Length: 345
Image (cartoon, rainbow, N blue to C red; front, top):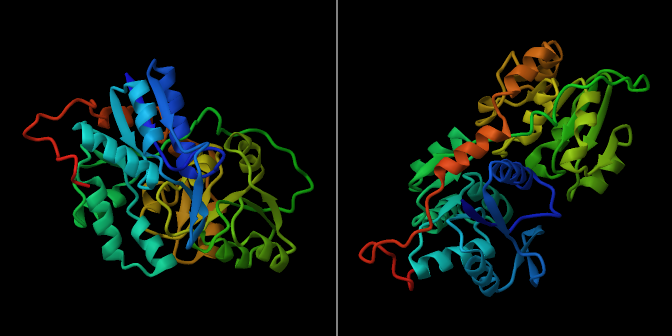
């Protein structure tokens, strides 16, 4: 099958969404499918005032049209709702083509926090954007329920997946590390809860992997913490294997990818008992969920690493890729009486 995935976010950005899609694409290609990523590299870009870290393509329609026409995909998937996603949506509607899409139920909350746009308005936008999608793929059951409740239809589970062969336990001997070593992997921003991690009064040492708008300030405020900067996904396993526990205080995540990667390396996870986290972490088996983060850390440190690894094996990238493939629909022409009017946006 020839599969086109249209996205506003791609390399060199390093985040959970890009890493998840790259793993899915690798599995699809290994199974003999041809995958085309239609992304904005080379186009003029602009930043949104409240989201300076996110850059969107200006007037991308001709690029999207040209690449999709040339590739002639059997299936079209719209990964994001930015300008590239809008262009792909317009392309499909103008030609009466079926398509699938992805959605994050946490987006309206993030928009509200950054811009004060009402959460209800954010969900109305998502409902509008995805209303012609044959399958709206999400990464979690909690997102599925939230979107259905807010009027987004045809919602199906894609699921999370990691390369469990890459992320696996390895022997490490770092005698210079002050134990226990507490590790945080994620974006250094308020919504990922890194400050809660840094404020923890726990014995041992702390490492932080990631970048973001708070990095410079946090490095100055917490000189005893080792800030290692951003790391490529393929370079992360040795760092996980150095740690005694991964601490993730974020409450607005959907993928929780760093939690899965750590658990695949046999590293237990400590996190808040937030919605969605219990879909990833088996409390008392692969990690600890608690309203008190310090209590979660203490409980996680006592867990069996073999059982932690075993739990993570259920979240393989192969399984996620299989679900993605099952959720796709052929980009066939919609019957003329059912096709949306191309002037409808």
